[in-house]
Length: 111
Length: 116
View 1: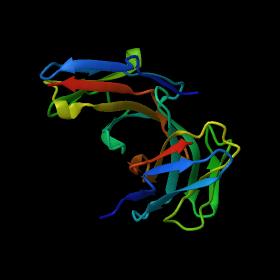
View 2: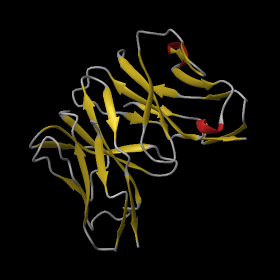
View 3: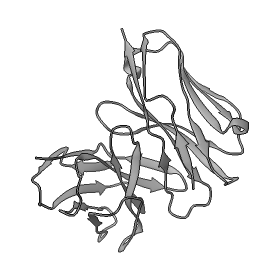
């Protein structure tokens, strides 16, 4: 079945560490997105990519980095510069104009 | 800039009650799309409906119905005869038509709890 796989489901990070969240899709969608979810704030866009080897900052890109070396993969790195990384992270793809598909998310906690 | 506001942070109802989730949006665009998503405890977002700005017809799908009113910039969602399985976080979202990168703007979400 086609879909989006986010891993791991739960991730714990020590302060000062970089961590990478995985997002893999087999939907053959060109566009991919990373959203951050905090309680009471909805989802906010971190980065997005429309094609391979190209990506753009979203509304809250500071402290994050991405790469898009393959169409299927759009990993998100949460760097030590991100002061408040504890959140739920959702990856999404888009087919056509407005057909979005979301992954099941990664919950990141700083310990 | 676009903005989506969901007035209710949390709603608690008893099974079989009807419940309406409010969504108000702000935009200068004349072409846009509105969405509702459901987020169950498992975390993924489940698509419920998409509406474009030129189609103000209300829609009904089983126990779900949506009321789109451009005059009040609202896109409200009603669940009739709620069930425990409806317990989830519900998001209203907006995207301007013609946007090249397809950025969804989400409301803050409404936590719906349906008690047996």
